[in-house]
Image (cartoon, rainbow, N blue to C red; front, side, top):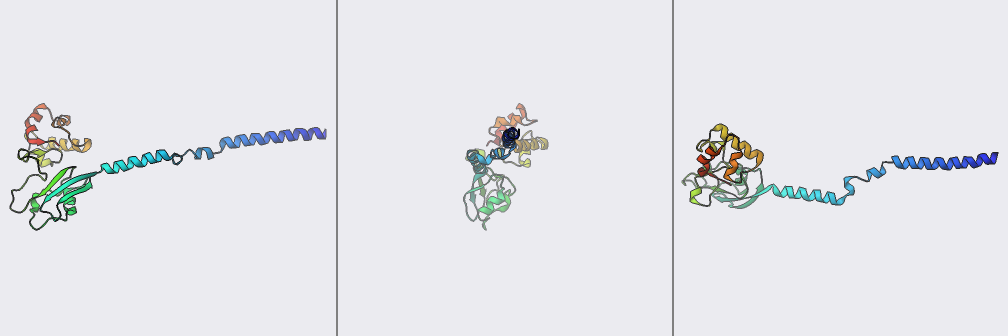
Length: 199
């Protein structure tokens, strides 16, 4: 009987070991811990590449001309202001007509910032246009509220609506995009489209 008990005891011990091993491995969090994002280098590399692409999209190019210390083409942050561009170009020189420049204006990609000399005809805008016919037009993507209000049929509320739409949805790509702005209809657009420039 003692040998029989010893035989069954060994069987029970072995069975208990396997049961313990099975449940221990089932609940062991090591396997789950190994399935972290760090275990997938390809996914991490893709994330890093997307971040780099996003950073590159935040840079824009501006052309600074006229009466600054170092005229030239500069790379800047997408949310920079004109005063930062002037500082980057070394500041105004002694001939600059500083009052002709809106230093608080936001810059945009491919923008030309021209600083006139004292005695030159004051310009209502910072940007230079490609042709004389466009020099008096309002650049709707960079115009201030006061400049937009100077347009035919545009009051303070519509001017603010244009600016709000521009900031929330990005720059206008065509004149017709203004129809998406609340309060701007076909008739209003017809009255002002000859006086604005997009982009």
